[in-house]
Figure (tube, rainbow, N blue to C red):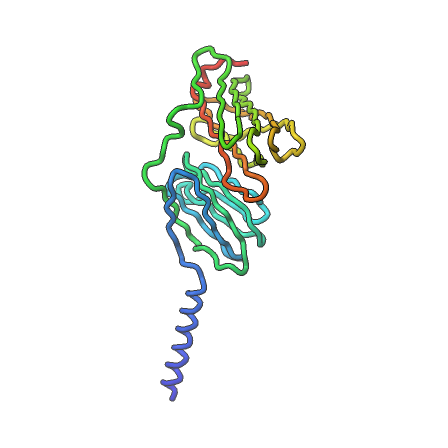
Length: 264
């Protein structure tokens, strides 16, 4: 009888372990991403952290709502992004690994099963160059660089100048489309020689709503960068506003030869 009772108890213990493992997430999962940004969903549960490990160094991380999840980059060879849930909710996250951008939708839920604690992110194929052709290339003694870009009905004009304190990148956005867009300054990134650098952004809103670029509205601003170099890159996103929404519109000009410009 004792042996039978022992077998029954052992069987119940094994059943409980199997059931508990089935309810939890897998220890790790692998994700393969391409050069074109595609939004992927990550689900966190309260009390559980998650690590994204990329196959290359992480240069920048931005979160839409920092009250939902805490994000820390670093770790092994600078390739890890650790997510810690703060409250139930939802936000978006952008991670730049080298010159490649990945888009993530982060959900913190106490009802939906969580994603694996370790997410291995690798890129398919060889990483593309920053740009096949720069938006503008300077000649020695030139005053400024100007580039005009158009995407999804938005016209963006960028002007780059050298200053005594570094570099100034002025922009002018004109909404020539029939829908509204929301500018997210916190998601903007400036890179000098391939490295993300701090900057100051001054905006002048010429529309009715300070955070939304309505059809026909215009906004101007300037990125003040306290360092200089030969190559300067700006990443400026606009998010569709209103019903249906959609993928963000990215303006990503690269300027070459900035060190050849006159200092103004």
